[in-house]
Length: 407
Image 1 (tube, rainbow, N blue to C red):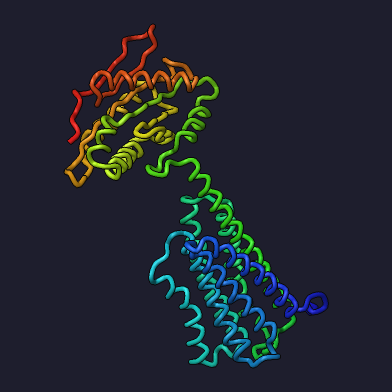
Image 2: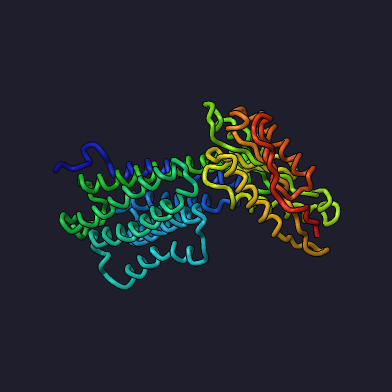
């Protein structure tokens, strides 16, 4: 095969990619400066900073001392891969004390091998060791991203796993190629062969594409967090009023006959706040939200729609099934005790249920019916489930024991 130098000079390629890496490094640093709590961004920036230094040193091979352009450059390169993995490890929320040690282990292994054995004087051995250590870090990244993706399903995360996986597969190929078609083992200056040119080209494309993906990942994560914040009640973590109404109304489009709505109102909540203080009142809301979340079946929409008022829309439930779920929430709430300075606080909840089959698929009408049932439950003594029926159907049903006092 002809030399790659006829149409591509490898040092020029490295300088070009170094310039692109500098742009990505600066972009990551500027991004991190506005969100300093996101340490994964700083790890990525440091990785690109080290990669930038590596590319310059490798491009100068033959012009600077061998130790600097080979031993030091590759030590920095492996440090870059370690920091790259550390960034994704932190991005996935998996950071630990041992992670920093693991990030530096590849560079440490390289330095020990370079100092203890003449093996790395052979360019093929160097390439195989480098690719092997890089492969380990790349596989670590893929595993972390695959495990994290279901928890944060960003499109860029899945694409990053694919890109890193492809680059990992290339490392396997390069290790095999050093055995099957080795380069001149004493080469110090970069060999300008087609194989070596393709290797540097693939690595350069990986570096640039990965850096761009990192900036996209940061943007998509920020957008997702802002969207979740806009749709979520900050105290309880449930859907807020606006998001709940949007989802419930969308679920009722099409004139469906199944579905039910439960409205909950914590009994005597003002008295809890007045007697025990607002911090205790907040804990009551959080604990009740936890009960509601644990009881909500798949597909249900649980929300805090007022101060102490909550809603649970069940798109696939019948009215009777909704009554059973409401009563489970009521019983669990009656068993709950919240610690306070003045002693433990017991609480109860009133529940109003309305079904789509009886009320119709208009959300406003459904909500009004459930609200009337909730009013009846509170009027009849609280700590009970009341079901709103249309006038033409069977009488309204109410379940629950006498009201329980707040302790």
